[in-house]
Length: 262
Image 1 (cartoon, one colour):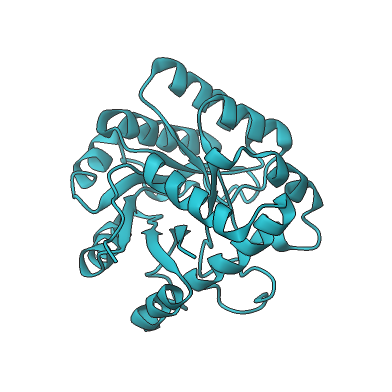
Image 2 (tube, one colour):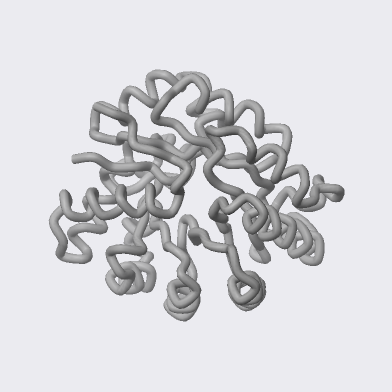
């Protein structure tokens, strides 16, 4: 089985101290590519450096909505410049989070718009974080897609079925994390069954959100195998079919990336 972890944080505590081991653990379970995600501007060089050292690791450049207040001057130009590096394949993670409200909501929207503009300028897909901000997220993405040149994925999806439908209608992909394996995630599990196979991705968001049967542990990219197996069973699809489809979807969306030859 060959899988891709479409969203992980390899420079975060819990993974950074044993990065080589973590990557080897995942490779041993059939994970063939990793998208290493940034959430602050100061992380960009470190995230890219991991991708430079590992042919199967790719990088993103972005600022999480929690960090919007800490990046008041971030505009599209800085993102576009950083995205010129050949190992950068995505803009994000970015978006809106009204659950924690760690940054001013207007600042979140401004930073999100900068990412949208950078995605349009570079042709790279957006990696979108959204929590308790469905209306504003949908409104901003609808406007962006209407203007043209914007595509992407709603990562670690936990939203409503309505938001999933809106995202799919806009041509976006939806990525499922270990949350889908949790017992209290019934609504998400129902939504997961309805996502077209050609729009589905899987991820860990490591070191967070370890899936069953690893709950309570530091999440690793290797655990994407467990999430994928659960989703395949949920959807009554063969694990190999789901692995092949989600891997193909990754390279179709993040088309600056290319599979590493075996």
